[in-house]
Length: 550
Image (cartoon, rainbow, N blue to C red; front, side, top):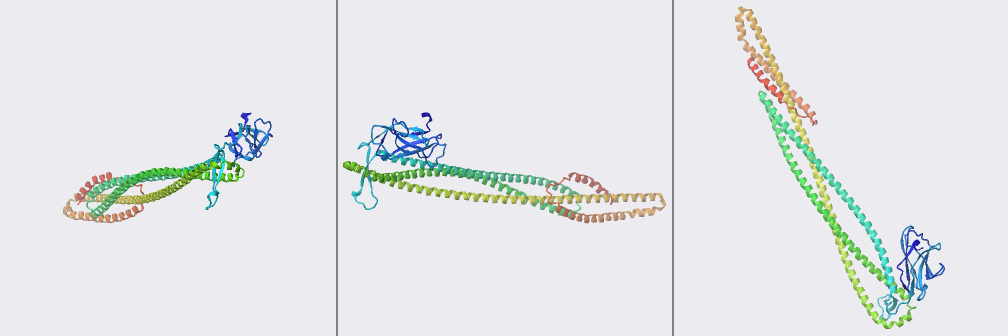
């Protein structure tokens, strides 16, 4: 039977006072189905049925009770309904709404308190500022009643503390979630900055490689230009123009190298700033954690002190309520009060000392409250200072972003300069190719003229050999041959001038074509060293033939 109990009585004493209110505490288990008609009866030991109760009280459930859960409850038996002090044993019995017994307590007895050991005298102060000394009342109450009221106040305070502790746990969980979100946001921003820095590094590396390729191509162009200047020694105007262009390209290359050095220096400065920013961010996180810990400790101390102050205020309120209740019972205990007035002087002295100690405690509590307020204000100032510092850091990060955007714009300008340089190199290369073609055409024309002169001279010698009588005419023709050759050379020079004029028109047309092809970045300059070597190897032969023709 004892194993099937669904309700359990708690804190059952061996003796109770009939003059005081008896508190019955019990626990409802999750297997018990509570009903509004459940009741607790006070039975004399040896009872047979549930109708043999001496008195009873309805079994109440706490607020917010849910079926299927454990709950701690209590109910009170007033002194007017309790039996008189005797040696008979009693016990509490829990009866549900179906009349079944759910719990039985251990037996106990009712007794009367001893005159001196179990009684306490209290002084009741009346309301009002101007009261005479004779109006104070001395109350003699059992010590158990005071202890019981104090126990009830402590239980109430404990319940309030549990509620506050749960609220504090919820607030701490919110703060943790907020801190996690802030940390994730910071990690995301930091990863974005790292990726952007890596992209800038890659872009800078690509620009340096492209610049090195341009330098190599420029060297190749310079070598080919030297070869062409040696080959085209006769074209002085075009050579001067080419030299001027080469100087401009060298100036552009110098400016590009200077810009590259400036960009590398700026990148180094950016790296240093990023390192400083990361270290400073770490220090700020450490300081923020320390301040959070200090703030939590200060809040915990503030909460403990406030709880102590509230508990003391509640205890004083409970004592005042008990004094008022005891005043209502003064009519019943007037005879006993008349018997103990002789002992009230000593107890009055003790009560005055207790009041003095209570006032001193209230003064100290006021000082502690003021100190806690000051510490809370200091914590608020620290939090505001940290928020301002965080705002400054965000502004600094915004400035860094603007600087990074400026660097990206500068890199874009550098790429545009590289495109222009490539276009100018392509234009120069095409002009050189045009000059080579023009030179080859001139050499072919000179070779054709030489062949024509050879055929004419051979024909004249054959005619002279066929007609030996016309020696004089042949001698005259031979004497007139140099002027004819000079006329041929003049003809070749005029052809050369016309070819130069046409080459200038073709160069202008090639420049226009190059301007249309400036946006094609993937084109590369092809080496022409082999072609120039072939032309250089053929050029002396044509030069000798030209001298022979002259």
